[in-house]
Length: 129
Image 1 (tube, rainbow, N blue to C red):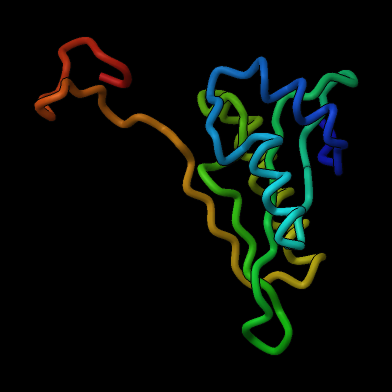
Image 2 (image 1 turned 90 degrees about the vertical axis):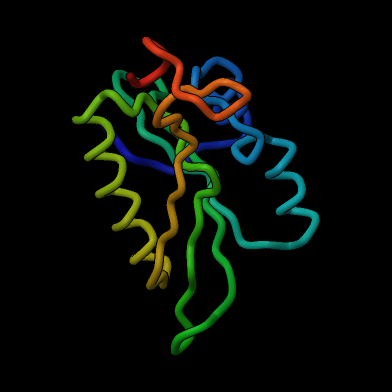
């Protein structure tokens, strides 16, 4: 596995075909960050020259002694069941943030803990039950 900066086309192709899609990790949101002149990075993990994880990473504000807060809104696009990939990606992401003058990294992955109906009741045999 290799953690690296990726281009927009790679990110878009991967994002269109991954099961954990979310609006915050799309080219449309990336274009918003660009329009607002926010500092952003597209990073991912490749294995055998194939992208297997990716995220838009946003650097926000210079808060503490010129250091920045980073955010990957609604979490990276990856297989959260693959512990080896998840561990590698998170360690490399933390290193990347540190190398880019970051002191804080927020990750809030879009993961369903328990599937519920419209009344909020847990669905038997639903997602993650």
